[in-house]
Image 1: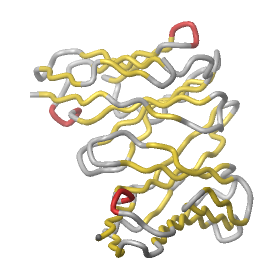
Image 2 (image 1 turned 135 degrees about the horizontal axis):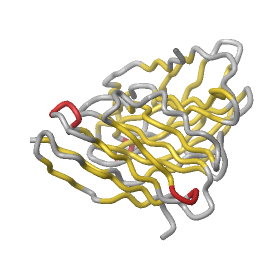
Image 3 (image 1 turned 60 degrees about the vertical axis):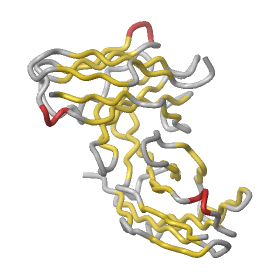
Image 4 (image 1 turned 120 degrees about the vertical axis):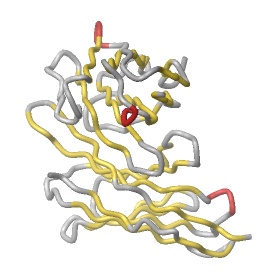
Length: 113
Length: 114
């Protein structure tokens, strides 16, 4: 597709379960960002990937959060042992190169019950 | 800590008026500046980018950048009810090596009243 694609659109999970969120960036885009947006709040940076460089993981809130990007394209954000405070919209964005215009996917709304 | 500050609003303007949205940032080394619009329940949509001091116009939108004052603004002329949304200021900075960080303000809620 032409835009950033995220799946699933919505995910409801039980507390303590693991979840995987997927982001498929715009074709050819080398930079990829993950953000979290809690209800009524701003965008919280989680992690940044740039090509084959080591990712910037400085925004990951705990060691329950991890992300990988395979083959420089699709990225998966994994949250282990989910907690209710993990409930938020998880947004992915990509840009052609680092520092360039970044375009967002539609997000994954995660609800932990 | 690189910060981006915006007035949270809400900013309320009548239809046809000029809406002025402001943003300040802390990192003097910031290189690129963006405005995103976010409708309720939707993801952010890029509407303007600006890289050098001065004004940049695109239709009814004008972005203004003053790096000396570390200040970015967005003007919306002839505001329409469809412009009602949260406007996010975003600042791109180098964060070490080849990495970049795109830092967002918390957004200003704009309401345009018919």
